[in-house]
Length: 71
Picture 1 (cartoon, helix red, strand yellow):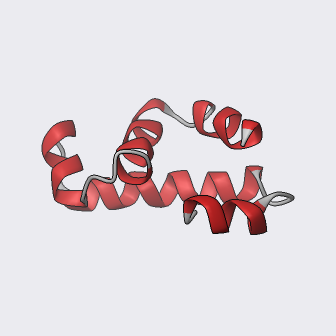
Picture 2 (cartoon, helix red, strand yellow):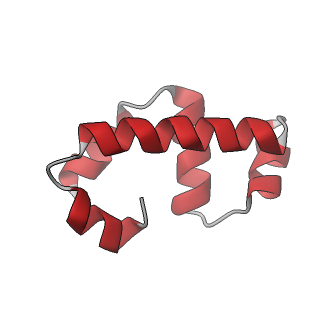
């Protein structure tokens, strides 16, 4: 869990915010788009970039994190 917190905190700011809204606050993409003042496609791009980065950074821990946080 500590590794996940560190990896998320190292994401670019907008990616981190979108990811946290999606996974931790369980907001929908339209809700995130409205909160961030961007399009739904923009949210999809940010979260996609965040997930790609997290998968790379956490590859050694991925099976456990997939179960816990649906990365």
